[in-house]
Amino acid sequence: MLPTTFRARKIGTIDSQWQAVFDDYWPAYKAWYAQKKRDDINPSALKEGHRQLVTVMPEMQPLYESFREASNDCPVAAQFLTGYQPPAYLVSCSQAVLLNEEPSLIRNYDLSPDLSENLLTQSNWLGQEVIGTNECLWGLDDGMNKSGLVASLTFGGSNKVGKGFGIPFIVRYVLQTCENVKQAIKVLQRVPSHMAYNVTLVDKRGDFATVMLAPDQPANVTRERCITNHQTRITWPQQAVFSRTLERKQFLDKLLASGKMSEQQLREAFLAAPLLSGNYPQQFGTVYTAVYKPVSGTMSYHWPEEKAWKHSFANFRETSKTVSLGKQTNPGKQANLLTAPANLLEHADSNHSLPASTRQQLLQSLVYLPASVVGQPDALEKLKQVLRAENSFSWQDYADQVAQVWHYSVPAD
Image (tube, rainbow, N blue to C red; front, side, top):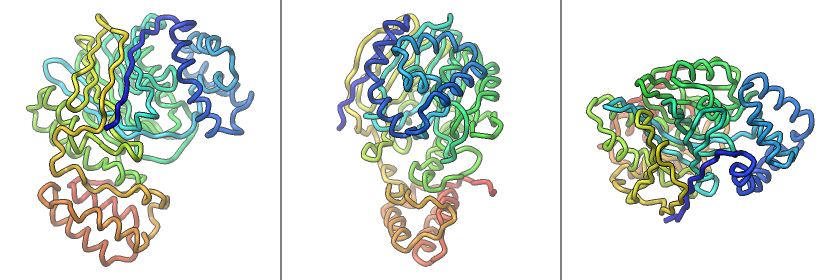
């Protein structure tokens, strides 16, 4: 078990309350940023980041200037805080919109608890009150504003990096400046994201959307009520297999298609496999399950066998909570499903023929997978046979056949 502490902070003023956040988290961010960016930290890059921020997110300029002043005008922090062109990063995550008596968004955030800020913040900047999970000092992984809009992110399943802003800064911008899903879609269609991410939106009127962002491509606006870690097709097969994104997406699709899900039932599904991940050693375990309800203005964090941690606009409490991560409420047979060993992710070429040793490792990962838990048992047996016999078998072939095992269609290129 991993004892992990979460904290809740009110951030009304930047010069004192946000500065305390900066003082706590900036040393770790600075080390990470300096290591990843290296020669890209310079006055020219700072100038371009500031120019992009003012051009694309002009409403945020007064906030940025206050952040910069509170960081003692550190030039590295000034560049980092623009949110423009950050280092590449990815998380896992699953999320779904439930449209019952009250619209809600439920999500799992999967990462190492050592890499997560584990910080819930309530801010009141530019006349908009926001509660959300803090990331990158002023960005958000998920959150809700008092106007009744909820936004949450998942990784989009591509290792391509382009020009744009980091997704936590984009989510913050959406919640600072938009009051409903329609407004948020317009923002997401014009703000460039430097990596592929999915942003799921729901508002208090029950409108919802999942917007798929990718560098150098138009935003794809969908009516998906649930999303995991790919978009319209698999483009990074290794990551897809490792994260089990196809399995989780099909599992959520079936739950929502039943039309009989209560909020409690769906929340409990997020607290068990295959949605709940225990992969903490490889930095992709479930850190928290969050539930946002925009009508009542309430949100809560949940963990298996732990008491819920609840907050609201009416009653946001500056408290802390320590939980033990790694518990399973109902792991059952689905705790070890089609998960590729982490070292297999080193094969970067999707179309490269896998060596015999790699095929053998993949085959071993399927040995204890009962045919009764997959969508297509015949496809599972075929996959095993191919791994035993086929020499020219690539990661893309593997991802396509895994999709068939779970009866999930991957569109052709």
